[in-house]
Amino acid sequence: MSNSQLQSDIDYIKSLAEAGGASPLRNGSNLLWAGIIYAVAAVGQYAIVKGWLPQTVWMSLSLWFGGSVIFGIIATLSGMARRKRIGSSAVKAAETAWDGVGLGLMAFLLTAYVVATHSSDPASITFLLAPGVLLLYGVGWWVSAKMSKQTWLKFVAFGCFIGSPLMGLLAGRPEQLLVYAVCLIVLAAVPGAILMRAEKA
Image 1 (spheres, helix red, strand yellow):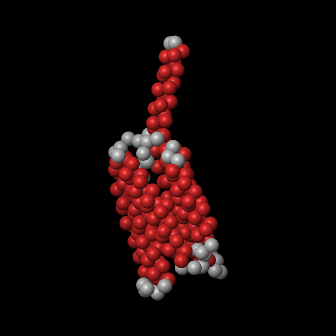
Image 2 (cartoon, helix red, strand yellow):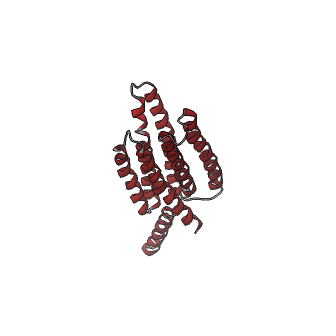
Image 3 (cartoon, helix red, strand yellow):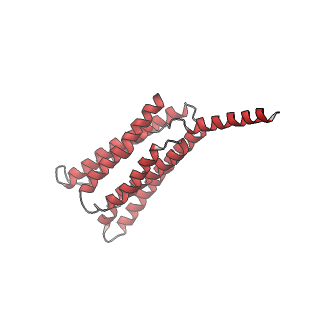
């Protein structure tokens, strides 16, 4: 095999790897619906705090737990559809990262609940939830950006990393819920919609 032919083969393999890394991500629908559903829940929780909706535990549970059930159904159906399509290793790695984010969110919320039940000031723990969720979203976006070679996703990740501590400044104020809702739309739903469009293109 001549050097020119060897170099040609190397360039071909490199082009395949780069093309795989640039493949469109396939979890846009999950992020779109997560952003919408939990933004609605956050606005609803704000309405409860302000007294516009019944200020009961069951009302809050119906918002967040009900939203989680709806999202779980959507994510399951979306996951079943994704398994039927072939994706590059980079795309699969990004999807695995988001699976890890989902597991991390569940573990984080469970930990926050345990801490709150053993704390003398359980209300203060709840103010950490929204910033913590946004922080984990940032991790998911960062991995997605690196694996898919889509630089714009890094700006979404930075938005999450910057928005998380800024949201902490609103701890103890109902307005934190509204800012959280806006962040979910801007940093989850909108990028998710863009990824969905790219996937269908």
